[in-house]
Amino acid sequence: MASTVAAERTAVLALHWQVNTVRPEGFFGGMLSEPVRASGVIGRAAGFHAAARAAGVPVVFTRFTIPEGEGDLVRNTGFMNAVGEAQECFRPDAPATALIPEMAELGERDFVVDNQRLSGLASGLPARLAALGVDTLLVTGVATNLTVEQTARHGTDLGFTVHPVSDCVAAAETAVHEASLANLELTTAGCLTARQVLDRLA
Image (cartoon, rainbow, N blue to C red; front, side, top):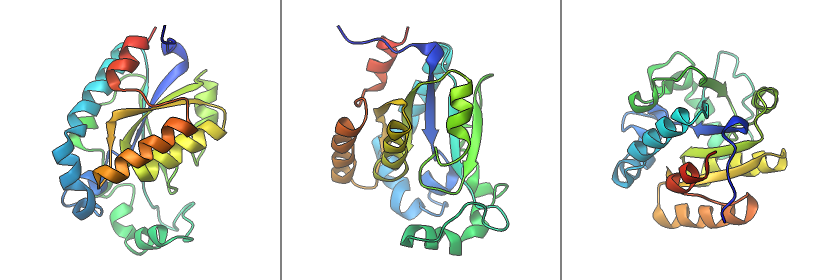
């Protein structure tokens, strides 16, 4: 019998559902907007978030932002150099950093965390989750091989039980997405579909 997921000790970690990431006008739009649209992942993830919320699981959204002074941004990769050079469109109040409309309505226990790292847990978020009694994370977001994989591995190393929600993540290329999920199957507590998660929530 499949193990249950205790709703009172679980949070959904919803990564980079931002205009910059998944809309054509966003910074990464040229790379990700069309694959994301074609995959249907936004509708699936929004539906999953709503169902998890209804089951008593908070949804924690992370946004990649760059405040004046660059915050915790470290320019040690080509990726971080690129966003650093374009930091004006990543300001916390810039239109492109906003959550997409499908994700913008927060539940009573939901909250949003900003950071400047690829991992959504590279901030004070782990301590905040622990203070809430959360030890299990259900990960959604874009892109599978970037923030999703980095965050899921990081969360596992921090001691959380991590389940990437396999049909609520997407990448620029199907082969890359599938390879990343195969990695995560080995390096986390295992990938689950949204339906599998909801069937296990207790």
